Image (cartoon, rainbow over all chains, first blue to last red; front, side, top):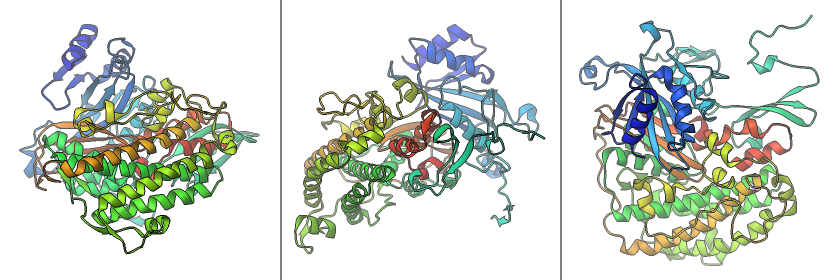
Length: 177
Length: 415
């Protein structure tokens, strides 16, 4: 199926409130969805026989922020975080990209982690990918069975892949920087 | 007085009677690097296996956000350090997809040649180390003897033995050397003079001819060895649905009976390299292969191991075909690529078939030369995630057999 057909099918099923956009001009065309609805959309993407996206190839978070004031004027994006789902279907042999965009902090309060539902019950690999996204980017996945850090130590502070991350001065007596 | 467990997720403090927590790793030889498995055991039976990662985390993705594409290539070498060439190729292709760079025919020919040679080297280590996990030492020594010659050939090609950074954006850094002194290992094995000078391609062909005869010996030594079959066949069985749901790729997926290989089924920018090449994709239950041991079940450790062994044969054939095409391949080995090339405000994701599975790179550009986000989706990361469910209710001695059959490299998992 082409990206337009996938998009149309999702809009027919969920309506324009939950399927908020499509970019078919990009190198990898993507469909934008409402973050709160990602779990039901994911379940539909996997179970619908025409879509049948049985494999989650990649799940990752991207922090759109330019901290350098000089470069910020030319920065082509609004500050936000997005979770990107790269899906593939072994039965239908087609791919798609689903994006969920949300503010960098919940309620614009620095320190309040943004939240969205987990998809780990749909694709088992999302369990580890979501743990990594939480570890690196500080995104809470609601309903995740074991949302703890995966690459960093459990007592690590901050979310290293955020653009405004401050490198620690010391960790357990080891000096940084 | 009973102890109150504040957070039941922290298994270290959740000790029950008659059960024992055993730490396997992070310095255990059969965990293939610094992997720590926390086992909840009852006698010899393992009830729960929790992998703990991150001991080798080197912030590769954060570093990648501050470097341009060509500068990040050396970091990809250090992810899967047993197949550096294939990792270079994955990143180079992703940048070429993002920047729409056309690569000359000769560069593509070189890439197939080198990537398949890298695949042989990686599978040789996979085979040898798996034997080591199960307690047999000799296959490991044979595998390293063979791999040494591939490393010598790579050294003549680009000067490095493990961290090549050879395949770069727009092609490769060098063309094949015209004349080399044959590797000392190859000279002693074939009885040739160590001062013999030959072209790189002839040396490679000589090595392949020698290696092909040895594959039969490995099958006698491991594949059809009754002890090896007893340790591997019938344990660690994974269904195709489970493999797909856990994102398993490469030989692990094909060992579960899914006929899928990106070299044939991937995106055009990758598969066009392999156009005009003849190769088969081996997958369980191995139609056409005789004498499969009767103990073998579809999707067990033995199947995953055997897929790798058959892939070595296919790669030998691919390298030969690439060498045959090399003299007539058109164009140069590289198109120039400026380090300061600005990336468009776009993004792309590309997966390539690395020896251990599908390695994906995801690059987001924002108008500068350095990407906004440089993500490396590790194949071993996904393959390892299946250990928890696979290692339930088995014996402790089967854990190295299962983890070894996944053929993981911690450098790629932790990045």
